[in-house]
Length: 335
Ligand code: CP
Image (cartoon, rainbow, N blue to C red; front, side, top):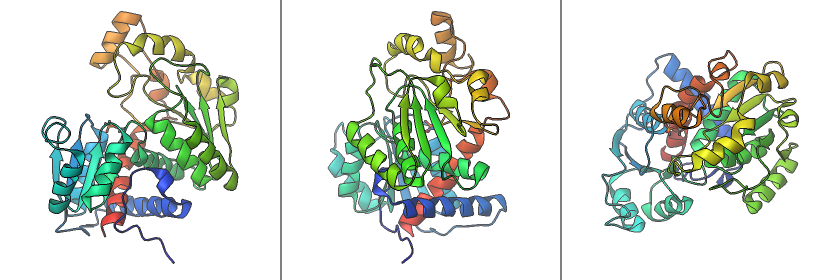
């Protein structure tokens, strides 16, 4: 029987089989082709969705809005300050109200349990646009980008540079295991202020899945070991969304050896690419980047400007792919 995701939520990748993830990736590629050829695909005309953002966003918000409009849907955006959720109205009540007006709900915000709670009460598909624990639509876009570069991904190696555990690294850990991609996480072994290590249960689960799919998961602090045979070098900002500015000092001290530089890229496979979920602090052309430069004398953080702007960088293709993959998720769950 073929894959049918109609009516399903998209909350975390552990909820999906390899076959279902492959189906979403193929659908994303198909939607990208339609978009590129200017072929209309208003397949969900008459439906309406709401985007519930408790944190700021450029890519995720725009991807959901454009994808929703391309599919012919009405789209409502609720910004971090303009809904009653959490302040005057419980998650459950918000879900039950929105579920009566909309055909699908996107949530970006805090704990994973919030998006799970919304899904349990909405009666319509709920999509995770980033929680503290997972960023599953980002991981789908990352893999689509890798497939466009390499084709078959079984046995390829993705290395994530930076601290352990984050919504992006955790989602990559899961999707790599499901798709037979070797996943290496390279960063300090010891404790990082304000951060945790990978959840042992999630790690054990992913190791089991990886073993079944013929790939491995490696955690190391050795940059050379990590970069060797790498096909993708990936990194993310050192202080995540919603985390306090006080963390910058210790993060800069601990994570500077893991900055992605041309030297690291040179240790990877010929043809290796650089990826980043964005936004990125690769220069001082942002308020925070300029402040960090003034305070700590650091002008590039998780990635050097040279790598970010290099021919190996796929970051903007990756950002575009957020839209095609989110479109696939919405179509698959709403059709
Ligand atoms: N990568 C990502 O989620 O970007 P935004 O925060 O801009 O949505």
